[in-house]
Image 1 (cartoon, rainbow, N blue to C red):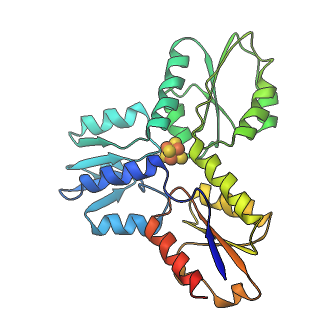
Image 2 (image 1 turned 30 degrees about the horizontal axis):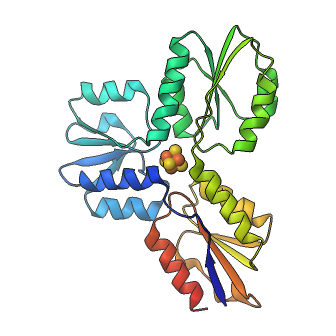
Image 3 (image 1 turned 45 degrees about the vertical axis):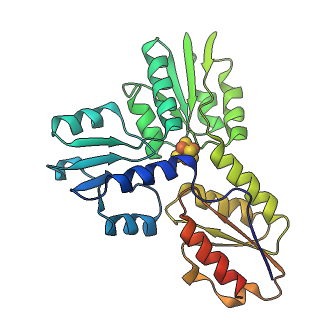
Length: 273
Ligand code: SF4
């Protein structure tokens, strides 16, 4: 049986960087604010290496707080400072750009729209940089309902699919005479989605590796499912031999928060089937 890896899979630039920063600051009561990435195995490994995790700043009185790649709002920076904690910022540079673009638009008198998922931590952080004044739009219906305004500034969640962004923009074009569109999309997600779909079209079975709590991995699994038989797994232990009955080619892809060592274990196990 042939085992093929997607052209783009696994850690993106921002996640690699955040983990490198976290490891550099391991020990001495350092912890990330929220899980550094949506991958339970990586969070566990970092914990063993001396990087803890907290969801609540109030529970930390000393040590180092590491901001994860999704970023946080300005009040969190202030609170870390107020509590006298050491701050290490691992916000992805693409996310930082979206946050600062939104802030600049808001300060220049634009009504800001963030195109993205309301409950995503990155979108919440961008929202906070607009002094919590931005409107978050997830779909075309919400865009259609958006009230006209004199100046409209638009930014995007970095992981937004380009096509979805375009569709929503079309509904916003007649909402103002002065529109600034900042396409703050990072290519990592699209590259992984495109590569996964191309591979799914060539194989009998796709294995999608990554946290079940990872939105981008779940999305990859959904896209592959629409093309061929697909299994979403977190680790190689979940692989079952009967999946491969009459299977000549199997494809593997992984979300942007899936560590290389987990992808390798899945690859080896598939090759042994
Ligand atoms: S997906 Fe893009 S924006 Fe998000 S962490 Fe990775 S590189 Fe940064």
